[in-house]
Length: 330
Picture 1 (cartoon, rainbow, N blue to C red):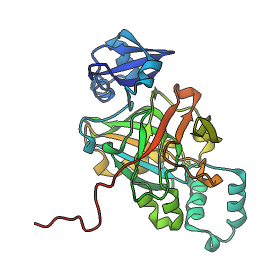
Picture 2 (spheres, one colour):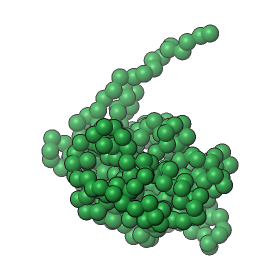
Picture 3 (tube, rainbow, N blue to C red):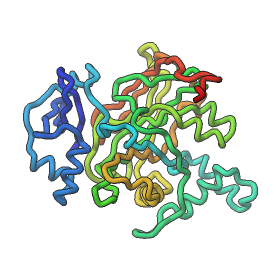
Picture 4 (cartoon, one colour):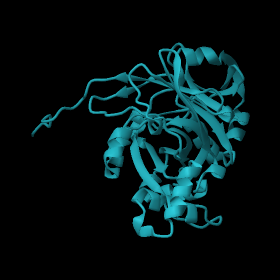
């Protein structure tokens, strides 16, 4: 089952189930979050909750996408109660990267911090069920205000040095009234970042992640396939500038999903009832690594067959909202 959130011409919200080129309204559902909380309260799965509420009228899915009326597939009415985060160095990457790591593994003193954490993940990122493995690299990206709806453009602030895509799978979660995280499912995401800034010094990683992101357009309910093969591409002036395969799923990762989820939700401040979490699981495919430098007007397209319609976003420059010396005094 794949679900979307969308707007009617009146601006009213609806939740729909995707059936090919049609979206069928879920009766009485105005947000996926509310639908999930109802399922938690009833002790049923999200898919069962959809079936219990039933389906109503249909809408033209391509038209909703073209008119930018598709919303992110999970949000919160108060963006401050929606946390966007992620993990890095979680995917196996290319064979050459792994070969390089193994060649250096005999002498940990010569490893970079990046390669050391990657090595730890390969060795201890998939513990036995119910046990904690090695913790991954973790980063904070922002709250719900940074999320760009499918089809819309990423804002490029004046201080940005790069506008690079990161094709990833994200886990979508709601915290129940019992302070327990519940995974609704997964979505394709673009964890948009500043790779030029990050490359200067790995301690700038935190700064480089404080950008917008996008995910969806669809929420895939249920388990994540062990092997996923998708495509990430950049178009400029209608022509393909860059394109590559990106792999995900546990078969292509050095951490299990259970381990990544544990090391996020082990922190009690992330267990506030009613809150929403979007957690990106990382990638091994970047156009930046191939020397691509994006620019305003470029278009990102990230697709995974198992997740339905592709995620498409552009880039547009925006004015800065804060300048040096702009602090007020009281």
